[in-house]
Length: 182
Image (tube, rainbow, N blue to C red; front, side):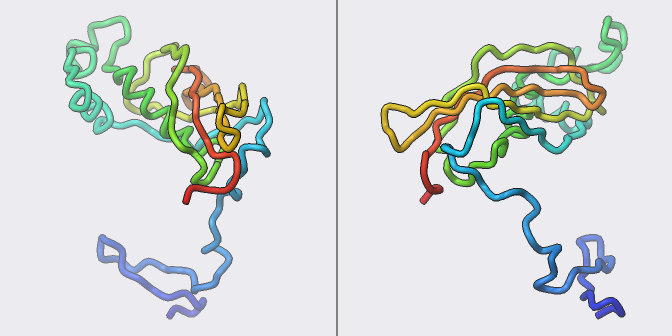
């Protein structure tokens, strides 16, 4: 134990890392408690934490999609285009947007399934080094044919750190109206 009551643990790099004592307030989860479907209101908004893209993202998007067009994979070729650099696949950014928006709003285990995307548009290219955020607004709520379930529509906007809109569209979720997942 150090003089401040913190125990020491070794990191994966072999260096000592101070840890808060058990029961410390810093061990409390930082996100708000999950909401129930019936507590949601059209117009509610939220923003995800940021995600900065790197060369690994670009390579993974090529590998995942199988799309090795030189605008994605060849830095020399891309320098000679109007964009001047390689861009990430638009479909990879859809994946990032829905992932960043996954807990907006936080419904705990109440999400049953994603019913799909609608009206998705690519608005600006995304580059290695861009930091992206998902800004989410609830646009529609309705009870499904099964009264124990609801359908939640959210507008997701994938926004760069400088405020430029990269992509946007509607995500539709099927959720339990009461309680959490079993």
